[in-house]
Image (tube, rainbow, N blue to C red):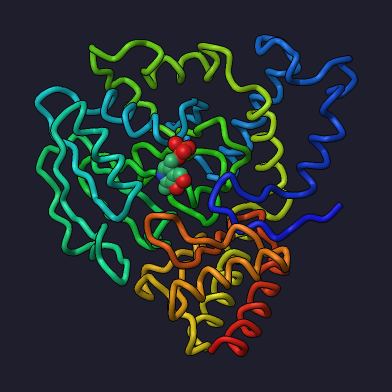
Length: 359
Ligand SMILES: Cc1ncc(COP(=O)(O)O)c(C=O)c1O
């Protein structure tokens, strides 16, 4: 078996230990005579797995008692619509901070539902950056303020979050559980699982319980947070196998020492890579220093032809998934929780050699 170093932005690398356990339990789950994929979602075996997934996430996030963990489907993209469908009552305004393609999509979808005020826009800035906290002017009486904690495409990440009077809603798809956060600062957090939590197919929603009561009358039951909260995310048949993986990945993370421990490793991995970029005189980071992401490290080479060659030669050395997003080009190394430091070292060695040969 050859496992490559997988720098993909998502779906992304999973811990080998988790994949091996899933493999061992695939055909028969814990002496039950069947796979977890074949079981009723109302049975006690699946229920234990489901509840462990919830509990592990609660533990890792140190979730305050007045918050709940929901498992939903449709990706983070469905949340772009569900957030306003639930929280944006008629006649109200939601503030959006546009920091890149994902934040822009969230705002666009919210406009279908109601009134949106884009209070800051750095989407097209080069170098890529986030707005200054002090420059944000929130709409008085806004229903909520939406931001994207880590922009996966340009590679920017909020270090400190704004503190508006309205509930803060964050798309944390690409950095959830990668660093400690104070959940109490947020009204609602959502994240597609396929970067830091497990495989694609489930979206984790962390909601302050009172916000689940803010039901817009026009919202069907299946699309209400309230429904999923009251039914422990078992209103309809959930993606059981993916949720099983969502019990295992956070269990693995707890074994690594939890979010504080993984954050130190993530910081070290990113710092090593940024230092190599900055020292090279050949590679150039694309985000401003204070906005650089620890999850998605983005950089350019002197020409697009060299970038193409870089991606091709790296892949031949088992360093795969380094091509930047098609909308921006360049190189992107996604180094989520499960990505090993040894892979970062291997990339740095390749980068030095490539620069020497092509610089
Ligand atoms: C920050 C962010 N938000 C939203 C999405 C969309 O997620 P999904 O494809 O799960 O809907 C992505 C996907 O890469 C993302 O990186």
